[in-house]
Image (cartoon, rainbow, N blue to C red; front, side, top):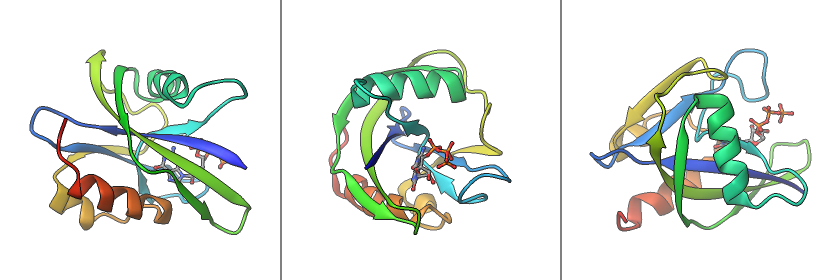
Amino acid sequence: MIRVVAGLIEDDQGRLLACRRPEGKHLAGKWEFPGGKIEAAESPARALVRELQEELGVTVDVGKALTPVVHDYGRGPIELIPLRCRIASGSLDAREHSELRWCTAEELTRLDLAAADLPILAEWMTSESE
Ligand SMILES: Nc1nc2c([nH]c(=O)n2[C@@H]2O[C@H](COP(=O)(O)OP(=O)(O)OP(=O)(O)O)[C@@H](O)[C@H]2O)c(=O)[nH]1
């Protein structure tokens, strides 16, 4: 199964960073939490640090994991592993997304999120902030 890590990046106001998938990719136009495929022999946390450096130009401190979600968009199952994190250094640069947006919980519920992210958002909304 393809394993994918997704970063729940929180700011000081308790908002999360949502990222919009660009045209030409699977799920174009949908919003997601930034991250990507975990490479062989790589931990989810290590993969998240690498992916967020590549796609957003930031270094993150990785926190707690939420419950992984298995989802199939019709191309085979993926396991999406959510990790809470915070930006430690760097400034955000949308290198692989069409748009970045800091969102409150209420704003996130109104975004057109990728289906696999919906249970993750629901769990995040009921969890205490670290
Ligand atoms: N990064 C990321 N991927 C997600 C999320 N939710 C979700 O369903 N995915 C799916 O996980 C897969 C891996 O994401 P990716 O960003 O590394 O892959 P990709 O689009 O570059 O490659 P692909 O088009 O071959 O799948 C994609 O099919 C993507 O749609 C999410 O919140 N973050």
